[in-house]
Length: 583
Image (cartoon, rainbow, N blue to C red):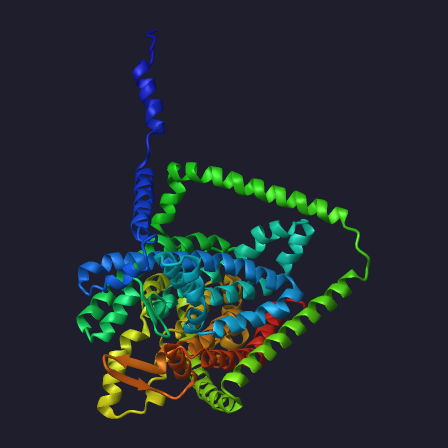
């Protein structure tokens, strides 16, 4: 019998072939290297003196837009990372602790109602003081401004999800004796993920609405213009350059499509495994980026040390917590004493804050101004109520139709992202021309600009709720022949109510915030304004009138918190009861 011996060259070649990088490895390496290069280019000016920005005017030529788009994209990406960390930590603590919830949720109501200009008025000097005379201080101020346009609805989404966890899954975690950290990793975060992903998309798109205010910062007599799409748009509006506005819209579309392909499409495909029911979707979402990450050995090699480090930290924290719990031997009256001290501290802090604000406003303006600003707040509140109601009637049925059809959702998603990202500032030319030409009332016809960028909160959240609506409940509704209003009342509204409340509440807060750029519009040398609280705050900010800024922001915060307490919180409780959550 002839003996066949494998040639050593073939053996070595076979071993080497198994270790050769796959095409996915090459793509992953190229994307990672390219990302690092772009980050390096985009951050190269951070150490430059702030005076360099004044010497470099905004270039409205199309060739400047790629670099401007890169700077804006990096700012929005950094703000998104901060928003994600904030949302999970803040909402997790608020949902799990009654003591924390009683102060953290009202604070979140206030934060979402404070206009971006309100944050910039007080925080721009702070960030500039951290890095005196450097561009980095202005960049941090811009990132924080974008963060304030992204974080609040994401935090509300996580809070809503954690408050409506299925009771049977919670009991299963208790039966398995999961630690709080295990419960968070195995149940809470996966359950919150579908809604969080859609709100991340909405946050990224919604941030474009305020990108002009965050990159072309004007506070008093100080103006800082950072290179970016927002400052490009602000300059094009000031110079009445319609061609430049068209190029800015094209650049926004390209950036949104890149974000969709490289970030959100992979997240949606990855988040499909977190569906609450056992049946897969009709159409499994796909993403070439997710496939690359899953099949690339290069990515796995890079991730392995990080995963080992995270596991080590989690084990150490678990061991430290167990040791602390076993060593504590507190008397039975301790929880009551903690409650008394905590709520007493809240009352004292609230009383001191209210007294300080009232004293500051009364000494600077007098109480006559208070009545005037309250009336302006009532005017803006009327607009907000009517606009949110109208947007709900339009977008809830559309959102349910999209969410129940995954194939349609995949096609509509990029379009909805682009429409949500379209800044109202780019509609100013149309609004000004139409109002002037036809002699229209600005108090009425400027109002749609308030809801243009915020109505998408309702759509995105309803789509998220309908997309995770359990298949067995849909089948049960079909078997019971539920049709028309009965189908909405018995099946769909209870299923999407938590998501709708989150979307409508953040849309209302966004309307209040959007009033600062929608109640007073500018196109070249033409200025048109409506009566309202947004106009009052914008004028006070531009004039550097800090007492009026404080008064306007305080009144807006009181309106938003009161409205949330009267309407949205009861609806939240109803959603929790429908989910079977016990207080």
